[in-house]
Length: 124
Image 1 (cartoon, rainbow, N blue to C red):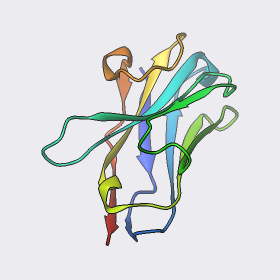
Image 2: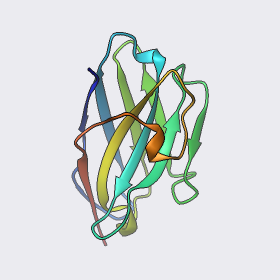
Image 3: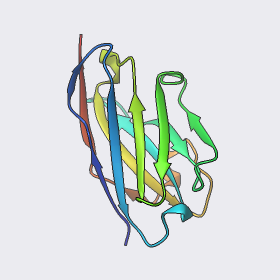
């Protein structure tokens, strides 16, 4: 059973930075592509970023490209989301997700494992 635990969300001012972490309890973390999604109140869950199992490739939503960076440390079974130049519209519950032995994608239906989320609030 894969368990994902996110952390690092908090209240921050616009223009600030945060780093989210997602720790996974899996035998071989590198077998999983990882992704971050977010959901704001009243909105559907949306893709943020994804990274391959090796960490060699990543993809981003246009809305965060150039501001957010996804990375992973396979020795620590942890994926990160570095968020810079935060905007109020980045306010959401951020989820990490895992996909076994397949490339990372933008589609939430491709991911079989999800964390409980960590709240990010950006004040203007």
